[in-house]
Image (tube, rainbow, N blue to C red):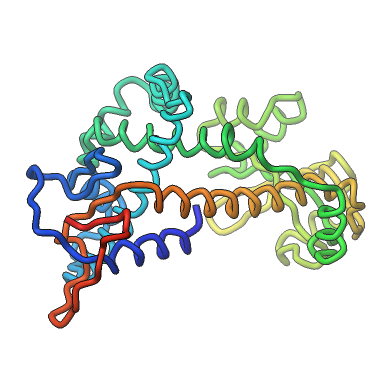
Length: 320
């Protein structure tokens, strides 16, 4: 979602006059009649400022941040309504599957414990998760099928961004790091037996195994004597590095090269697709806003002492 789109949308809303009509307590906006509650803004604001204890923002800063958060929620609600109109809303089953996927990363009741410790309301969390699923579905099922990338576009992008596809010479290593020399030595032995990095880390809790890429000329001085003559598949001696011990296993050496158009295409396609999706979404959003009835509580509008009223006769966005 483009930030510029949000700014344009909020500017359009905030230029409108205010109505004094009172709504139900806790409702700060309506999108085509669907209420948006202050609790939704509070939830996202608290998440944004989690861990910033002691920081006291100004009233104008809070108003500005709440306005931006409200803009995000309005867009998410418009997207959700669009999916419903197309008869492809986010289902309860899809929501549960997504929640179960998140919960699977937390053993036992750790997920609930985190919610308690972070003062996160489960229903608010689920509502935001549903919004995110709606955004993902809208982009993948509505916008993406309308976009095509012509090979000529890809060729033009390749020609004008050649430097992006130049790969410098370097080496790929498997780096094994641990708190003791013995642990690292043991991990190297397990790696030699064919165990995966995940299996090694599971067996040896104080050991990490990860792949790194180091360009030629950028090797740390303490590593260079141990790896400069290393053969493919060979491991360095255990190197002492401050309070840690590491071993480097050379996996690959690459000369400097320029990717061919065919090799670069997956990257080019990703970049062009993202640009086209953003443009498509911005056009859709502008049209949707014009056709929608969006009402904002006057408490969230900028306060100006000498502000002349603006006519809203022909506007579809109104402030309450």
